[in-house]
Image 1 (cartoon, one colour):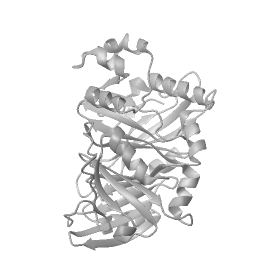
Image 2 (spheres, one colour; image 1 turned 90 degrees about the horizontal axis):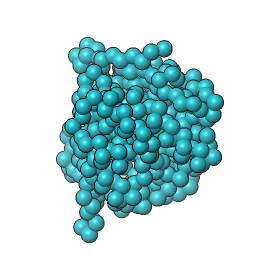
Image 3 (tube, one colour; image 1 turned 135 degrees about the vertical axis):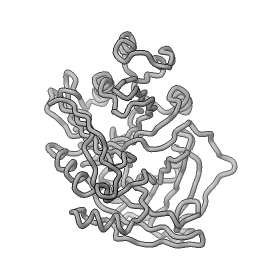
Length: 377
């Protein structure tokens, strides 16, 4: 099988029944939301945004929302053990629960997706306070992950009803240049990728714009397959990975084992200056994968001329790849939890619309070195 690239769907009303405005926020279920919020603020440069908990009338959980430019993370912790959030954390560890999508009509989004076969997670509900109203609805996707549809065109508050503005005047870390969610990658089980490709096509009107088989994404020891799903207007992209046969355990298999099921493997965050962003993140203690320096010996032969100097790219371990539209630069953190599950990608696009196929071998060999150190290869 060869790699295939196609264009996103037309944005006309006749083809795009679910026009998405982008990612609204990513919600993580975590064991200690207060400490997790501090981590994302101190290490990644997020700012305090909003808080929900007993003080705001929420009795079963606390949530901290943090923001950096158009990126919003919500960190949520249960207050008691007899709680679905607590069950989620016990099973999966800290991880992504909700990939929330901005829409102009959350009721219609729920109706359109559920009538096409989606399993409802949340029927449309209106939340109101003095700053206006937000309408939410939601559906299930792979594993215990959900998509929430967020309609906030009639809301003027800090985040949404049920939250109060949250700020710490004594702790306001500077940002690291992270701008918005570029894409979110899901790991699914053996022979499940095509099932979820069909789900996104039929239920959400997405299109498979890019496909990689086990010949594209393989090393001496392991392999995986991946398909990139894109919303009709191209604002939201969800690559989906599944394991492939190899001599040893692939990164997807390791994830599935330690996450105890399917889930969101990583969130890719965009920047306009990856050298500055990764440099700052490293100063704050974020750990990144490192490819061998020999990767850079033939880099320009492979990708052609680029604007950046090779020296800082080499020092930081930034990867570069080119497609017909331009080139991209990317770097990947090590897992940010003790379980080898969730990690982050930092990406700068300079015209490229692809996902770094030319970097797969070097990247996955770097991941395998980490797997081997953990005894999981």
